[in-house]
Image (cartoon, rainbow, N blue to C red; front, side, top):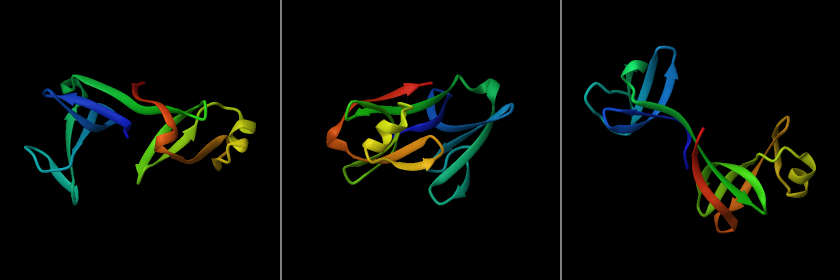
Length: 120
């Protein structure tokens, strides 16, 4: 499940992090100009002018008829965050209060509908 920036550079899409006039590109293995930042994570900084596309990608779904963002997946479950903005609905669904106005929970993947990536 993707939730974060992506950039297209030299015909390939990377996880990315914009940083002013630069973009940090990430990949899981070594490559030309990429430096290891930790095991299995390599970064290369390029000028934003060299990037063909930069977008925020978010995975969304509906669960029990309500809108959610998908944050993670594990063992047939999805970590979801409610985006409907109605606390009585979130409370009735048994969602955890993560922060003020932010409600999250675990949904069985088999009960989730309309799973899709959106470029924001």
